[in-house]
Image (cartoon, rainbow, N blue to C red; front, top):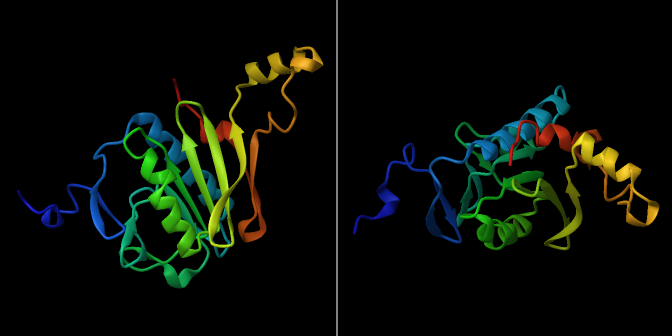
Length: 198
């Protein structure tokens, strides 16, 4: 059997997880790519002129010798981490868009590696349920802080018209994620899930 370590990395995307080479899905689905692109665009625009910098899918991240990942989006606030061919060390914020083939790793071994490396904030984005889980660093662990669910303007209107006992709270209906990095900015869920169909 051919050793996957010798495959051309330009042709077959790979990650190194706990020292083991893991093949990535070569072509993400359209909605996955839309979401990661939307998030990168929001980050890039919000950070224009600031020290922190946004990076899109496709950029190699070297957390340590045993963990080399390719996140769907990230924010790096230490310019010395940005090298010619990769990011070295923990970004301030990492986004992974979930897919059936990667969800267990994104929630398990990769989340633990991000936490141990010192990533401050970690987002898991669910394409199907249109939810964003926001985790923040606490004592070497990434702890869930909030889950945001996107509701269309029509769904928001319907909720507002329901009797109070059946209505979702303002907190449950919150449609913006507050990012504290680099002076802070808000991320509208409508922009995250723009053009994302079912």
